[in-house]
Image (cartoon, rainbow, N blue to C red; front, top):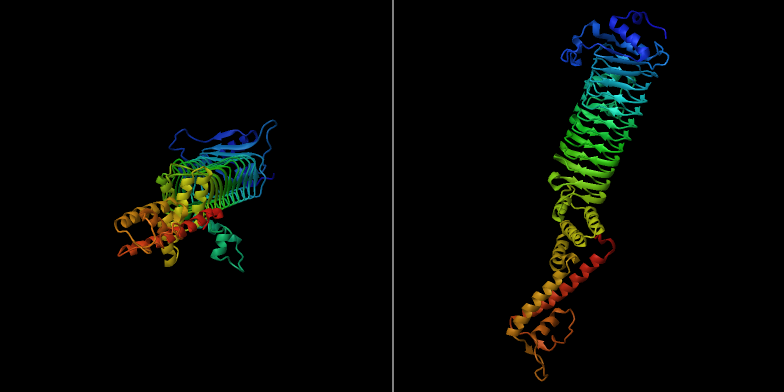
Amino acid sequence: MRLTRSIRRLNPAERQVWNAYPAGAWVDLRTGDADADDPARGAEWGPERTIRAEVIAALLLGAREPEPGRTAGLRLAGAHVAGKLDVSDATLTGKLHLLNCHLPEMVSLTDATTVGVRFRGCEMGRVRAARCTVNGLLEFDGSTIHGGIRLDNAHVTGQFRLSRACLHAPGKEARASESRLEDVRRPFTERELLERGLDQSQWAVWAGGLTVEGGAFLRDMRVTGGLRLIGAKFHGGVYLQRSVITATGPHAVQADFMESGAAEFSAGFTATGTIRMRGARVNGVLSFDGATLEAPDRVLHLSHAQVEELILTPASIKGEVNLGYSRLGVLLDSPAACTDRVQLTGLTYESLRGHWTVAERLDWLRLDPDGYKPQPYEQLAAWFRRIGHEPDARRVLLAKQRQRRRTLKPTGRVWGRLLDLVVGYGYRPWLAGLWVAVLLIAGTAVFAAVPPAQIDPDEVRRFQPFVYTLDLLAPVSVFEQRGAWEPVGWTQWLAWTLVASGWILATALVAGATRVLRPGNTS
């Protein structure tokens, strides 16, 4: 590689790096004083700790060959890197490993291919690595990145590490840096800027389409801005335990259509802003156990998702949760950790876990801000039946009919109340027997005290108040008592009431039985 004249004039620190690169040896410029070596104070470091970015780029681009039998690499600690480190579009054969370095300007790996990139405990400006391929580890553990990270459509064959990192959304500077892409004949509209990803001011991590073959470890981060992970694939899972995200826009995490082996937003994870995972697919556990979630409107948008096990037991949650049309293998949640608005229409699950009573589950179904929908009740009843709890299933279906009644016209509500009172919509047929017993006792007592008059005095009959009352209750005379005896005085009203009650009970029983026996019980 032909070197520029400026690169041939190296300062002593640069000469150390230049000589160490062929063997992949470390160059440590730190003083041993932890306070003085803090890269946040890197702007104060003098020329003895300054390395020009163009020198690093030249080495990574092949300015020096590796020593025979050694693996070349740039390993540097405690340096101030002056200028923009740009290795875009290049294929790098040597690893880059910077520790406690200060890189105030942009680091660009856009469209590059490299064998490993590590920035540990560094103070950095903006990182751009769109469409890059890292054949190994991509690490920013413990680093502070003031201008955010761009990783859209990047591919990492190893692990992706951001643990203990401190990330800041870039603000308007990110949009300004992309302005060169605009066509002066037709500038982008605000909508197009959002669609094309040119306005990244609210995103600390812009990583739509990112693929990570290993695990993505993002634990203990402190993020000001959001994580944009639309369509990202984390085959080894993504782990954000104890991370704190404070959104500068509406979303703390936007991960629509994300695919992951597991996703841990747990163990003290905190998000201020919406976590949106519409259409996401998690082949293992998606956990919010012990998390603190807060948003002014919708705090968790998990509709149309496929999750093997969802653990929804946050320490605190404020805002609406949308689980609509998702398919869950197992749902583990808790009434103590439930928000006051949950969209459940279309949600299906194979199993429910958690310490819930049936009454608490019914209250859970009523939290849907869209009001009554039959499917959530049918899904819950089907699960109770699947585990052999038929009485609980009937209780859920009865609650469904009662909620449905509120949506009917006045005549429908009156008939519904009657069905509920008499037979519990067919799910409590024993109520009809109770009403019959009460009416039989009352009728028998009254007609024993005030016997009816015999219609045909020439006919020899013995009056039986119980049989007479039972005959009045039957829709059709069975014991031929009605035609033989005529109630007298006010007992006529009782007789008419018994006849009407008999018809009502019979009709309600038929209607209730029809509802219960109907396939699917979906009415």
